[in-house]
Length: 133
Image (cartoon, rainbow, N blue to C red; front, side):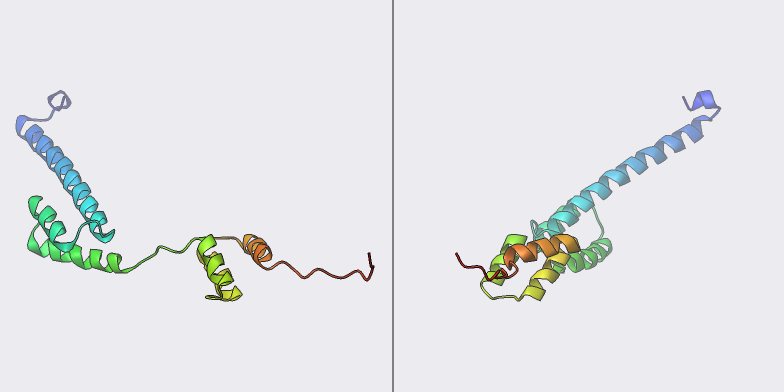
């Protein structure tokens, strides 16, 4: 096909070698990402991660750079409690209403949804009508 486009033999070999290199790098990058994801999720410990990177032939200098990035990601914890767990913390007086509402904002609830959740937890007082039964 390359020859049909007027490419010489040497140029065709170069283009094919470049394509092979590109796909090999893509494959290695995908493997490195998978290893990094396993490390940051604490599925792999440092030793297992080093072994996996070593099997890919990643240099020590590159490994150090990767660990710098991955350790930073690994130490940032983003998992939050669920709404039900925050509600239970409120019910058990571990957090106050403001902390509950802020936690709901952190979970992505809209202001209206937070208002509804708050009313479900702390219903408004019932007004007395003055009528007796």
